[in-house]
Length: 177
Image (cartoon, rainbow, N blue to C red; front, side, top):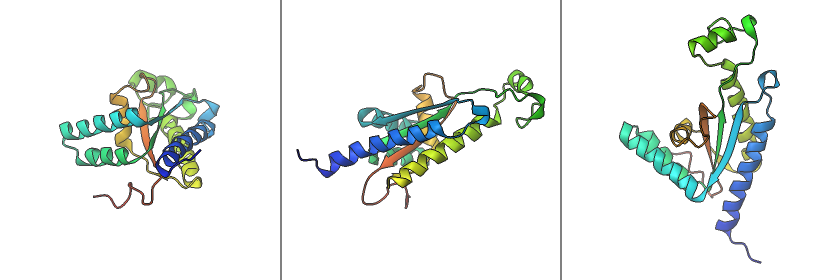
């Protein structure tokens, strides 16, 4: 059997994305409570998300959304990492949310600071795997906004980041206009 470059690279990007999701899953979480959600998109589904991001950019007059949509179209795969909203139950000893306690945070409709910290640690773990496997990646909040708009996580993730994965001779995510 013969495997040619484009096919090999597309399959490798998806497989790397899967390894990145595994790294996000095993990343440390506050109090060991896991609210992280992940998925990998490729092909038509990835391109539909790129189209949504471009549409959002054009409607809201946000030029870098359109640019990021173009970058996503150049990638073979996309990793999405999101976090569900949750409270860690640290009570009054924490207060990082500025609402005094988890109860106060819930009543005020606030967000637990540990959600964002866990998401950041998961993203760091994921992109380090991508780098170890020599894939080009870039964390993009714009892609996460489009994933939320498309309800890809079915309302389970309130904050989502997108990480396109590219296997090419030159990273499409740098030297951008």
